[in-house]
Image (tube, rainbow, N blue to C red; front, top):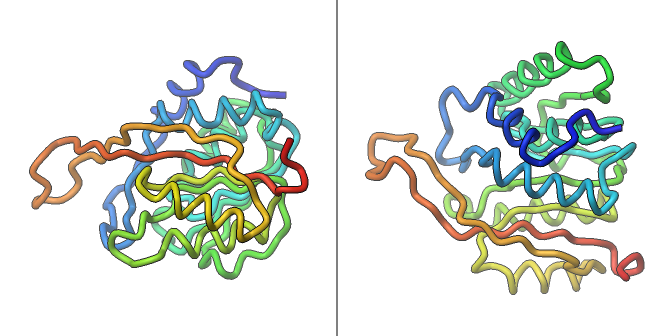
Length: 213
């Protein structure tokens, strides 16, 4: 059963989570906006993709997507990230959530590259690097995701929609939903000129073609 009963309450809870202490720009560590995370996760809940299911939050960072999934009834979430510092923050955030509710699902933390995670799950949640610093980093996340689950929620720059659709089709998936956002990137480094820079980002719901209706 979900612990939180509305999208607005979920957004408030997610906004209270601890963020990155020091973002690694080369790894494109930009936090997922709580309002955006709440909207995507609430849609996933309404579509029946979360309650009682097992998810993996690939490149979890501070854990906002996976924790949101736990709030909405996931029975288990794997939090996977190669950055130990970020994963420790995800642990701290999850422990705080668990201290508030004993009914929350199981959380498993794995400090490893996503390439090493090979457990089959019901759902993949991911906000991968957009490939700005490391070319095709987003492709590597997609290649891993399609091997792990029949349903995937994945964030990408809106301008790459054609690529995501083509990759999905070639991998035996369909894009069933696409939600568009003005994604806020907050000032994290001295050379950033604006406090908040917004970019066009979309979250795609990919589903195995044989299951698509």
